[in-house]
Amino acid sequence: MKKIFLALSAIITMGLCATAQNVPDEVEIVTDENVKLEMITPAQPVQETEEEVKAREKKLRELTDDVAYAKAANSLRRGYFVLVADNIRLGQTGYRRYDINGNSNFVLFQNTDGIIQYALNTGGSGINGLGGWTGKGQVRNKRIKEKDNGDVYLEYDLVGSSVDAHVCITLYHNSKRAVADIVGGPHITFYGEILPYRDKDHR
Image: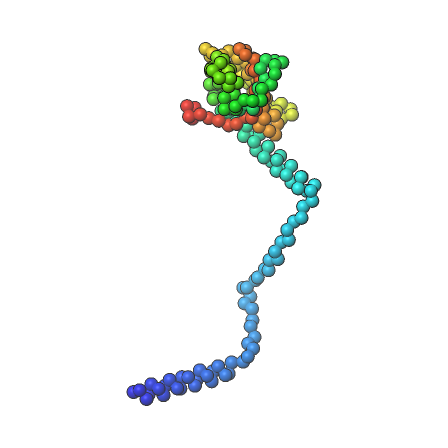
């Protein structure tokens, strides 16, 4: 049996060698018709001029401002927003204060409720203990319109035990910047940004 196995192994080996010797050195390769390759050439880095860089950055700022304006305008129309002030003016011809905290100087509008607050943070003085005044009340006589130049104008009365004020807010076109003029009680003008806001009590 061992001799038979060795004999068969020798025959198989000789057959494989003979087959290998019959294979030509070069075999013609035919490309399959379903193979369609597209060679991608790496793109060369774009070399922008200084003017092109400025134009691109300006366009990006404009798009960002457009989005911010759309969100602010929508929040004015829906009646859920806060104007966070970065500076205020006390009195109709008073001086401007820039050293304020936006978290404590704001105009808040929540559907039918509103708050107006300014705080100079002078350490315990003022009606609200923050060197300023806080008025909470109900929103009445709300009127909103868009001007020809794209500015959005909101006007309303805020009436409560601590406030009886007329509020005029102008949101500037293509921006979230706004100004709120408060007449009644202390005359205050807030300068800042309109941000969509809905507190937990008005969800």
